[in-house]
Length: 114
Length: 109
Image 1 (cartoon, chains in turn red, yellow):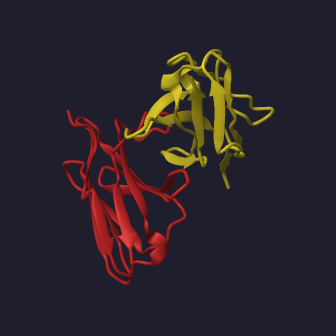
Image 2 (cartoon, rainbow over the protein chains, first blue to last red):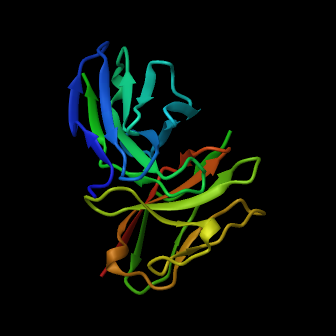
């Protein structure tokens, strides 16, 4: 089991563009969460998906949207990119949505917005 | 609003010395607290959670609701403990997790 996988590894975009990041959860996991980690900061919660629905959302604008597919994989979409969106985007998966469940993190996608 | 504070960006200790990584939180409800660790070139991974009351790699953490703290402790630091440590709080029915800014632990041989 490769654990949580994310693609691509790195991405460079320009302001105003749109980007899609992808995540495959650990085998057997059904819940996916996305985080944004700026340089020198801790991960910031974007949203969580369970049963193909967004269940929780952090303080991120509507430019950030997501999707979960029947196979539990997930996408994070960011529209109208801003320079401040440059960050490491982490995906985490767990078995079940309960808050006490352990989350397993992927290696992240490094997004650079020029 | 919930918040997690880790006051130290960097903590340097000698091998064999005790370690205490500080974490304070603010949350009006009943939180779930975690410590995550990231070793060099590795992924973020769970170290321990307060609900389990377990000791992992010699580390323990006690939830003090009166002081709203969840400090991570180890009696004798080892070189392999050098890593980035994040305190995190989960609230609500789902996994809305708030992380602190992290503390880099450097164990000096």
